[in-house]
Image 1: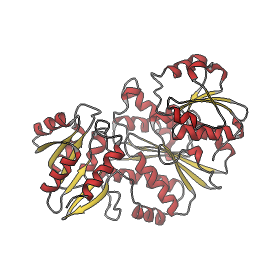
Image 2: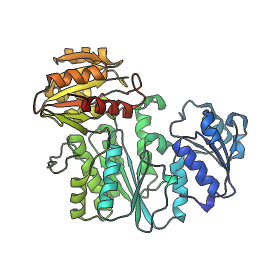
Image 3: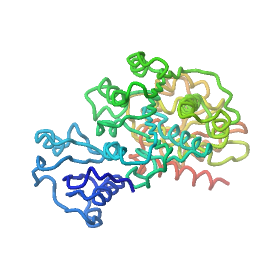
Image 4: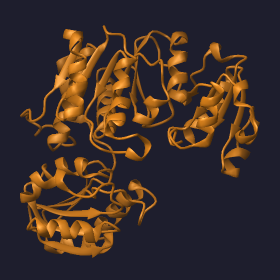
Length: 428
């Protein structure tokens, strides 16, 4: 595990004992810190060792060096966050603790990757390219194991971190050797005072950087373009990823569609900044297997490909998935994050038929019919899969790309995707 002598003798309050919180407690305790923890789940509290369990509502937060919270804690509304700010106690997350520990780790580099869409794929792709090139690397942050849970890399290693805006909000000292912004589209606005505040959170990744370190920014949306323009003084240390670049993706089976072209361009830029050879970059792109529930091919029946893109929980992430196939039977719906499907409109001409499910089903169906599309209001995923499979012809794709969250009918997007796979596997 990653620890730091600098934590020894300090006092930390930790709120939330899910994976990252539990790993944080273990790392702090191992370093000799005094730790007080709380979680509303009694089972998680009972599993803690080496720390004091106490309701943090009852303690004086001014007596702690920091309040360490899970990224899931809404800093804008949680009363404990307000109390910590009033007490002058820093509110941080495990990524900030990692940043504090870096000085004691073997010489290494850090890649930080953020953006509304594509973070996980790009992070995994960079990690895979590095592994292909024989460079020691770890994934962490918003993907894989908590970063503090993992063993330190040897000298020359690279930590590849997927960073949500929530994690960036809890971080003040992470100076990434390579920082990446893929895109910014409206999301998580319940946590921010408008879209501009959300974009400003993403921009902080570069504000924490030394100016001689590498910045890579996708400029396909206005907010990201403005951030790139604000970094123009960096000159050769700024790489802009323009939209619509034509690439031969035929040799990259797990990187199809225009969005994955952008993800690949960002990963290539990262790898080049880290000195990876073009040969190893090519091998990495060709052998990358992708991530579950992100444009994942889960079956082929009678010449029809079935694709699980359950991770696409907003229209902006669904749109490029539609653009990856010439004839699509589109399964969509769930708990909508916005009012419409305008981001998907450029690819409506590829939709043979749509099959709506969940809470958003009726609204989505009305919008699609108004746009001239054929729609089946299936209601549930099982009925949608059967209907789409019956209607599809050889060469078509049945695409689960919901453009909505899953919480109306499923535990999470992963359960939704796993259910889709099981239904596809059960087709006669």
